[in-house]
Length: 183
Ligand SMILES: [Mg+2]
Ligand SMILES: [Zn+2]
Image (spheres, helix red, strand yellow):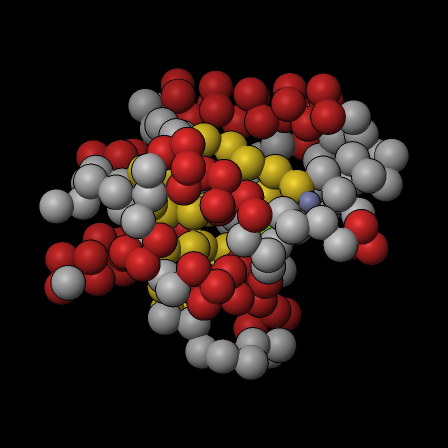
C-alpha cells in the first residue's frame, strides 16, 4: 500500500541543526528525536530521501568532496541508530545560476523519482523553509513546515498554508503516518 510513497526531507534545520554552512562533519549536530523519527518512516514503508540546497559549493566555501564527507557522516550517524536514508540529493549551485535543481524547483525530486520509482502525489516534503513547502505544491504532494532551524521565521513568510506545521521532525512524522492511513 505504501510502496512508492516517499518523505522528502530537507537537511539543515530539519535533520541537523542549522549551524551555518556545514563544511565538515564536526558541525553536524543531529536534532533530538530525528533518528527515531526516520526509523518510524522506514518501518512504515516510506522511502526517505534527503533533498538539500548546498550553495556553499558554488560560493567556494567547501568542495563537493567535503559535502560528500558530511553527507556520509550523516548517514553513518543515523545508521548506527538503525535509521536508513534511501538517497541524498543536493543542489551545489548558486541562487543566481538559475539551475533546475535548487529548491523550490523540483529537479532533485525528479531525479529521486527516476532512481527510486516514487509516486509524487502520495508523497510528503518536510522542511524548515517556505521553499520546502512550495516544493510540495510543485509535485502535488503535501508540505510540512517544521519549526526547528529557520522554521519560526519562515512561518511568517508563508503565502500558502502548509498541510501541517510541526514542532520538529518527530511531530511531522507522526502526522504523516496518521495522514497516510486516511487515504
Ligand atoms: Mg533547511
Ligand atoms: Zn542546482
